[in-house]
Image 1 (cartoon, rainbow, N blue to C red):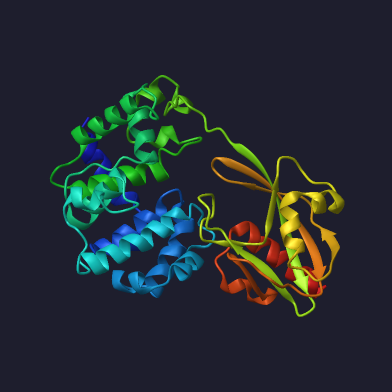
Image 2 (cartoon, rainbow, N blue to C red):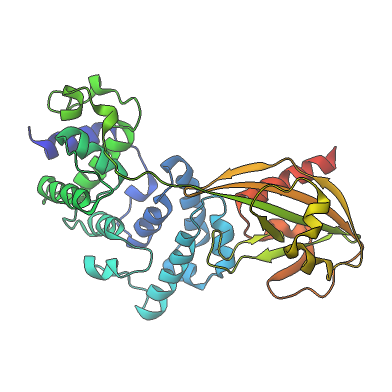
Length: 356
């Protein structure tokens, strides 16, 4: 079986018309690859379009504020990608004279760029023969060739990279890399792939041995941490509220949310919440306050964390003596700040209730 020829032929007949495939511009290719890390194409497409419209060149992106970049990124998650994107744009613009690196090893030095992304940029922008190895490629190669080494082990990663390096069409690396990624996205999908219509079904180890669902093999399962967030939604007489900028090395760094009291278990009533030590600092900023409403707990799932969030709506006559990293704003101006989706959804539901 000539794997690369069959694959590229399949790709020519089945590929999607995606905007980042119609360019050799390394900035646009890099941007698309950063957006598509941990993000499906259908979701990432609109963000790619927004970024290109807002920042047509890497210089435009470099000159933007981080807050503007995070706001545009809002909803994509894994916000370190956006911070690294902005950092790298400034590095290329101001330290490299706006010229994106052409050498694989130099691309690999860029912040937020790993081996996969460097290979993708090198092959898609410069047609260099570096194999891309992402989740789609792991799945395709382990199934077809019966690679039983766990892909989350160093040995497994090396084995798949070595196999991909053997298979890549050195004369057409761009087409090969795009083809194998597309094959994993459209044909050799994670659940219930259509093996009967697969061009490799006569040679696929997993299909022949009825073991498709077992590949790729992983040795470690992600352990999720449970956290309980109690958000204090202060509303003053002049419709102001407090926002907190998350500068700590935690989730959602440099995004904004409401003042937070994190607890080891759910808080059932306002009396218990008021007695919590973290709540006491907020009392000094309030002239008076009264509890209005407690939301139902909202589950928010991240890759390594499950958050149970409760929003406590609290009336106050005025907010004063605000310390660093807290900002008093009009409640309606929250839309101008980059916030986690959890906060955005609450604000949207809050405004819907106000209309009724």
